[in-house]
Image (tube, rainbow over all chains, first blue to last red; front, side):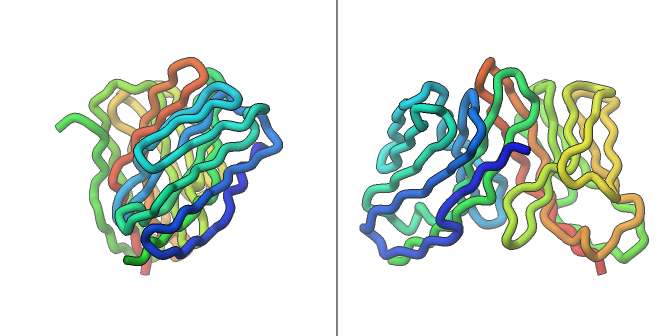
Length: 111
Length: 114
């Protein structure tokens, strides 16, 4: 069974603080996706990382794929209340139909 | 409208009743999925489908039935609803491009079984 463990499970911070969310596995993935889910909505894709060691930036969000393609991190700089939501990572294998989802990190950013 | 739509958005039913949740996508994606999301859990895969007439069990299939006679539709049926099936249900479709598997989610159906 392929598992993706996310940490922390819950995170509550003040506006302006930095934070990092981790997604770890013992399995190697061909790619890893990060999604954000807001209350009452379905998850929405933020980014896909494919190459080991790859770093992608999306405004104040920085995503990194581990060198061995078993783990990933999401770093948010100067968090804002609009960043509040559930962050999910999902690992995929080439041409495999289904992905493995982590249990998510619930982020609350207080004004 | 283009995209993936789920209906109904909200449903209240009673124990023992049959309930069908609908999912429709306009992209012609080959893969479709049904997940449930409960408080304290992430997404748990119920069933998925690789193409019309091809379905497979996910992590938590018991008590659910799916069908896929057309590429664009993937209904999920609870044959005899139980209280433990109270949850938020998400349908997704997938565009697989080599190593990437990007899933597009509907807005969800919130189901309460009384």
